[in-house]
Structure formats: structure tokens, C-alpha cells
Image (cartoon, rainbow, N blue to C red):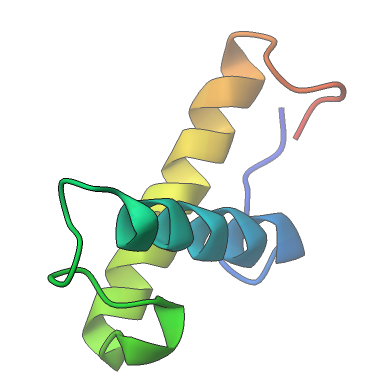
Length: 67
């Protein structure tokens, strides 16, 4: 399996989608901003986490193709 770069468009898509889920969650209502409201440091942390989740999903066969 190849490494997943932070620049991979799937990383940004996953990070944004996850932040939107958190933003809409009843547990975080009013406290978690949408993607656009995150600081640059928060966005970078989210991208790193999303990349790691994609790598993990690939390792256990959750993705339709290898990363």
C-alpha cells in the first residue's frame, strides 16, 4: 500500500465531512465550527487525522481500492 499524502483530495474531503458531522452533532451544537471556522492549525490537525484514518481503512480492506 502506498503512503497517503496530505495533498490527496480524499484527505481534504474526509476532513471536511468529519468536521461537518461534528458541527451538526447535538453533542457539539454551538461549540464546534464548520470547516471554514477552524484555525489553520486546527485544519492541519484534522487533515493529519483524516490521512491516518484513510491509511487505516486501506490496511483493513475498508476501501474499494488500495491507497
